Image 1 (cartoon, rainbow, N blue to C red):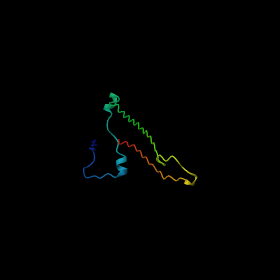
Image 2 (cartoon, rainbow, N blue to C red; image 1 turned 45 degrees about the horizontal axis):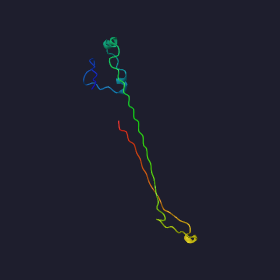
Image 3 (cartoon, helix red, strand yellow; image 1 turned 60 degrees about the horizontal axis):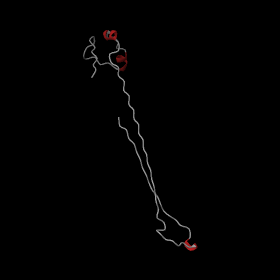
Image 4 (tube, rainbow, N blue to C red; image 1 turned 30 degrees about the vertical axis):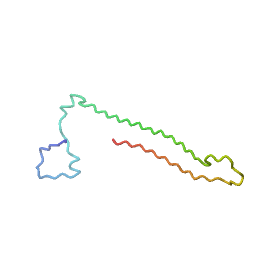
Length: 89
């Protein structure tokens, strides 16, 4: 954890937001060393979902003779398919 040391204020002094915004100073001894750390964070997330669904409905189950009195055929088929990807970094 970083810390800031202020030497010319009494410990009992409370600084408000405005007073803290005016705090200046420090030194740049480390500036002459150049960049000390090169932090590069690359996060690559590749997600793919491949789904295939084949629904076969055996409507007449090997009935060979279908007459005109059969009427309209209603088949209640409601297949469902879900997929989800999640990346937690």
